[in-house]
Length: 478
Image (tube, rainbow, N blue to C red; front, side):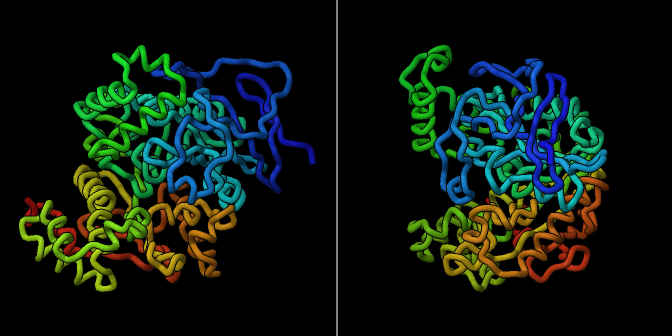
């Protein structure tokens, strides 16, 4: 069979055929100078251009999660603003998913194997676009929000070019996990993205990473000190390795590494409070978390696994004036948890679940639809200590159980295929028709449970673990 070709504004691209799916990799959508906003790529070419290889990933130092997910094998380069398209090879127009990768805004790439869009395109007749954007100090120095600007530029490219691949530019859904999920929430608040997508899916959005302008400005000073230079112009002259080294110093020395490099309220591209603006955005939102998000980060941390009851009480005491009662509430609902896992459960709620539920509450108050899910399948690997941890849901949501390294993370239970079919079908249904298959969030706080035995539309929880929600309501907190 002939390799698929497509004509975009710049010229003709030649991709790969994957048994009914046309794949085009490494398409440049924008260019950018260091610490400057990206601009659309205007290059044209007369001969056919090869689009069978991923482009370079953004400069980064791969973290634990990237190694676990089977990190991209592509080299790093500042000239990294490329995207990849996975499209059914039959006539569209098909709805479009634009996947925004996670990685704490310092790691990751659209070319990570777990994000491959081939299966979604083949099984669910959607076009999938995966995107690179600038990371760390390169993308989030101060309140410039350059990485968000890159994502907006990629969405403009999708608006202008995706029809050539059989995609429907009027049915674009943005989707991401962790920092990618927070990017989704941030894009909902970005005026320049207002007409570039019609719906959003946020998996485990790390919304506490979204920082205020004061925090953003403070990290500029921290980076200058770490690099031993006086101003941003001097940072421009550093090599990539020197800037990454300074970034690593900042990440290793701050008390709040989570917000060292991340989107900022009241900054460029996002001149408002992100969460407030997202709560007022009428576009439908599908949002959810895993049951045990933080187990990924705490299960092998001796400071957590060796935690005693008095330390747990002290940690809970930073949030609640009656920490003993708060611990008892958690223990009553998580009677299988040891002391360290109770701490991890509390941190899961602080960083992921409570912010997601609070956003859904605020959106419901404004009359806007949100659809909440709770991924509760516990992986059996490593003796089960990871539970239903952060990132475990990705290969299920994208129907990628066959990708490299997935079984090492998820185990090999044959029932996984049914869960992947359920979850990925819900994602595709929401993308196509704005309905995932379960009720929207309202005063009942309806949540779709997802595990090996659940069925979409049947296993609906109403206000799950309500006593924990009440703890976080503020009535019993400092």
